[in-house]
Length: 198
Image (cartoon, rainbow, N blue to C red; front, side, top):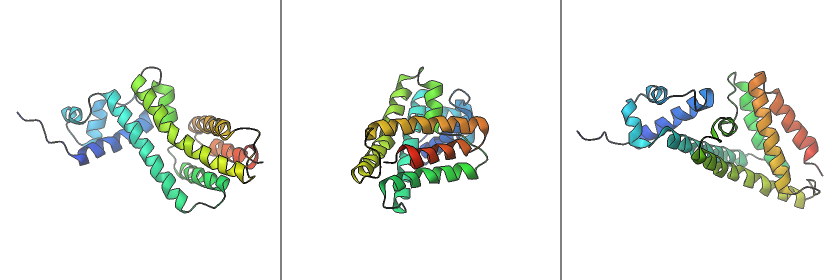
């Protein structure tokens, strides 16, 4: 018997469904059957596209990173001229979504880092690679802000970017615990109104 034909549509559907399920239920709370049932494909078909659940998760992480880059590029089109205002504009759009939605799944990167980074080297390496892109963008804009006198210079752009990322991910976890976007709003206000300022 021949193997079913692979299609990009099915693969894309599996990625979209997986992103949604893993965001809501986590890695360990989501089974292959959950994924294939939600995607409307036979369970055996999953392995035509992905070698394992772990490999699939790594693809989901990359897919999530690609979506984040697309959102960044879209937000950049309507961003203000100031480097710090550009950064804030991007994160404000995310906060607006959190404030609109009653389901607050947080950040898939942060969720998975807490859940599987110790048990899966493949996923940990993929998480690190995907985190590098937004960090590099953040550093780029902070350096511009430092060069124009908008941002403080007693800390390096890299140090500030890392501190922001750590605070942001922590505020997303608190958002999930409290079921409120208030922690991310406070984090953003503190960072951009005080911490980064020259």
